[in-house]
Image 1 (spheres, rainbow, N blue to C red):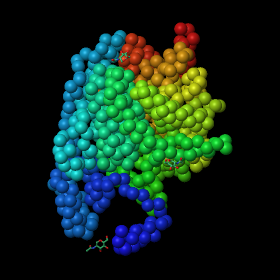
Image 2 (cartoon, protein in one colour; image 1 turned 90 degrees about the vertical axis):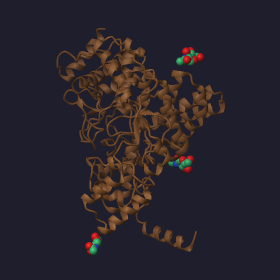
Image 3 (tube, rainbow, N blue to C red; image 1 turned 180 degrees about the horizontal axis):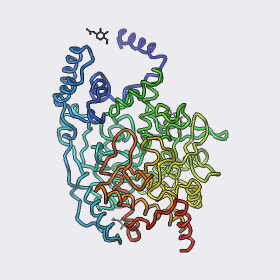
Image 4 (spheres, helix red, strand yellow; image 1 turned 90 degrees about the horizontal axis):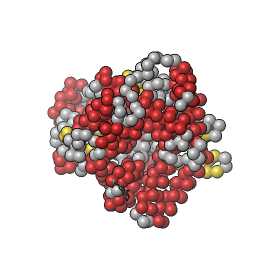
Length: 577
Ligand SMILES: *[C@@H]1O[C@H](CO)[C@@H](O)[C@H](O)[C@H]1NC(C)=O
Ligand SMILES: *[C@@H]1O[C@H](CO)[C@@H](O)[C@H](O)[C@H]1NC(C)=O
Ligand SMILES: *[C@@H]1O[C@H](CO)[C@@H](O)[C@H](O)[C@H]1NC(C)=O
């Protein structure tokens, strides 16, 4: 290091002493940070900031940046909107040109699950959902491999399913439900390709990014890769693929253990659990103007921390929700976000499940020492979940607030994730969970389980309902040995299928989320318009149609009963069975 560099570092250190300096969200001076990004995004050339950062460059970034420097200095670093627009049109391609449609080779006309569906209208609809794989299939153009510097997209060898709409690339946690749907559709080859892409990303980056874009690299999403592998292997017996990639699965769990760990003291004992945490500054490139405007309302010294918490919120998959605002100075404003100060139930249940799966994978591959190591990790986590997140009085698990040293007792479907993940020791807990749902009056909602009971305008709050959260509760309850609890699981599946089916009948589309407050509607709120497609919604619908196809009905309940009356009727019908 030269004296000059040393001096520069020293000065930087002094200048930034007041505020914790965080690195930018990623490296690209076009897609991640810098003047070009700032001016284009703040001019709001497009209704959705994601559009600009998805546009490929027409030439090498050096050329684009040089052209922009001339333009910026010609306008004293404040380029008027029409000139910005012309610049982007000249130097960038429209979105989507880096990908091409792909019809999966393993798609067939009539997968067997269709025959099991008793209701003719549901059977025909299931056939249409199965057709949608041909619309959601994409592959990346070879240009992305040849000239990666021109794209925010990160090249992937295998074709994949996208969620749909603005989500032009694949997403980490979405893909678990997509993969389940593909297996129902007998498309294990496509499922394997998607797994291969995720494993490639782990081999390269040491973790699974939120999606294959440079601006998603520093954050992950709820960790479901080991589960995807387990489902694929259970379906195919492809243990060779497991053997080839077991190290990548282990690397991914090491990432969570080393970069997302937090220690919690409860009752005089210390436990290690995990949290969502993304210590990178700057606005999210794909929501740049919103993040910049939000930060303008907080003191300058607090902005980097706010941006990091927003990214952690995105990493949680719940972007955004009152769940991450509780305990903040103004829980109605997104600027109160404090994702990393909470120990989430779902994250720790997912990791607990992954540790259990790793133990069985290693046992299957004949590696007993590693199988034992993961079994011990899981046992340690189970004890921590029991001590820190379980609430004996309320009969459910709750996020733990690290700063206020207490649980957050609000309702979220994720409060039951340990059931879904099989991370609990006492089978009676599934019936306690049913009581918890009854106490929280959740079973009174006829069209789906709400995301929370707070109406905030955020998309991960009331009145939106999301497919993955329905699954957490439905398959959580279905694990119970009690017929009554299993019947409630079925009834919730029935409600959700009717919501999906009803909206599909009216709009000819599947949606990323649903509004369950006044009949079933496409959802709303949050940072962008509701999207059609839609990967995980289709995946869960196919799973439920596969599992309960002989009992599900397309018709809505006969009369609009009062919610309480409906709950009473439900209980009565269970008693009379
Ligand atoms: C350029 O912008 C700066 C800061 O916005 C301003 O102080 C300066 O007067 C401007 N120069 C010209 C030539 O307009
Ligand atoms: C996988 O192997 C098990 C046990 O060897 C067998 O019972 C099962 O039928 C196989 N499944 C497939 C899809 O080949
Ligand atoms: C998290 O893991 C890292 C790496 O193993 C370790 O250095 C650190 O002390 C851990 N932090 C906590 C709070 O356990």
